[in-house]
Amino acid sequence: MSLNDSVNTDLIIRTALCGALAMWLTAILSYVFKRSRTGLLFMLTGWLCVVALLVFLWINLGRPPMRTMGETKLWFACFLPVIAAILHFKFPQRAVTILILFLACVMCVKDILSPEAFDQTMRPALRSPWFIPHVVVYMVSYSCLALSGLIALWNLVTAFFKNEEIEPSKGTILFNLVQIGFPLMTMGMLFGAFWAKEAWTNYWSWDPKETWALITWGAYAIYIHVYWRMQKSVKLQMFILVLATIALLITWFGVSMLPSAAQSIHTYSK
Image (cartoon, rainbow, N blue to C red):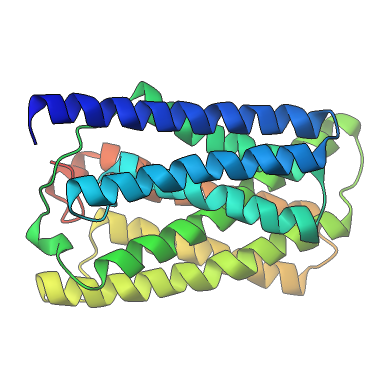
């Protein structure tokens, strides 16, 4: 890729991300002022900006745009509005939709402020039929689970300052999100194991990324157990869900900052 091509690609990426950010911020304002239909329109328009960017990158790079942290954040931001649109019709709560859009805006801002070098190289380990389903399934899972944790934190903080109990119905919404995200996370781990066997001859190597993925999986499993066994303890459920989401964020972002990550087989951006 030439320097001019690189500059043009960077400009297109920033333009698409700024467009999505503008649409989603407008959608947030629309929901704040109770213009839900207008908000839904702007939310979907922003989603189309991200989808168009992913298609452009896939064609321009000649590979799936799933290798770097910035590329996975694009997929994360892509799936968030889809979930928000589904919740818009099933659980029409403006606060939930606003939180989802806020998270999507954060992903856009991070990619705008910290652009990565997009190149066409593809490490041999990534040239596997398990690569795309592994990343896509995980990003859908992370979208649902991160949202559940964010909403749980919002409910806990709101209940604390208002000195009131949390309605069980709010816990049900979060459990519905986990019901989608947890099985997908399990599938993602299985796809990852098959991929690891093909790329490195072992299904599991106790790499830091794999270890934290297992910790995260266990945390959500504990949440599901508590939800079924202690249905009246809504605050406890949400507290565990927040801790599980912290583990998810460590798995996704934090592991790469550990000293052991230098030798990790899951470091692809170097």
